[in-house]
Amino acid sequence: MYYMIYISSAVKPMNYDQLTALLQQCRDNNQEHGVSGMLLYQNGTFMQMLEGEKQVVLDLYHDIKKDDRHTGFHTVLEGDIEERNFRDWSMGFFNMDKAGEFPKYKDYIKQNLVLSSFEAGSKDAYDFMVTFNKINE
Ligand SMILES: Cc1cc2nc3c(=O)[nH]c(=O)nc-3n(C[C@H](O)[C@H](O)[C@H](O)COP(=O)(O)O)c2cc1C
Image (cartoon, rainbow, N blue to C red; front, side):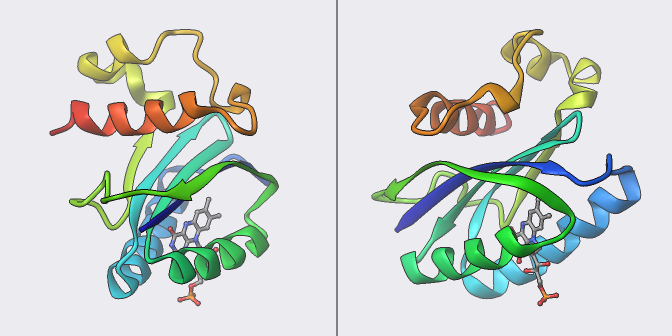
């Protein structure tokens, strides 16, 4: 199993309908290809983790990188994993701009946490996504 995490910026801020359409596309494709993961959105920034069979993840990553709905794409972390972290999700999603409406997340997302501040090589980004997902279990 292999995972990749990247950060990017939406070319235009995305509204609910656009995010929902994107997510539907992700879920349909990922389910078909055995990919799981999570997508976070915060004030125009995306952070996504993909996991699955290595070549499948690399190919998908390559396609996502070319998507003209986002820009400023950079890899944060990638590597081998023993097993999936997001086994229940072909693509989990959370709009962090709405975190205030969800008390259990609000406590975890420190008010000043800015996704775009995770730097390349940041193990914190990995831990953040995995822990964030566990809150939901
Ligand atoms: C932020 C972002 C995340 C995306 N994540 C995924 C994903 O997890 N899986 C996926 O298949 N496509 C994802 N896409 C869409 C792909 O870039 C691409 O549009 C899609 O794979 C093309 O699928 P299609 O050939 O079936 O239309 C993402 C796009 C963006 C902008």
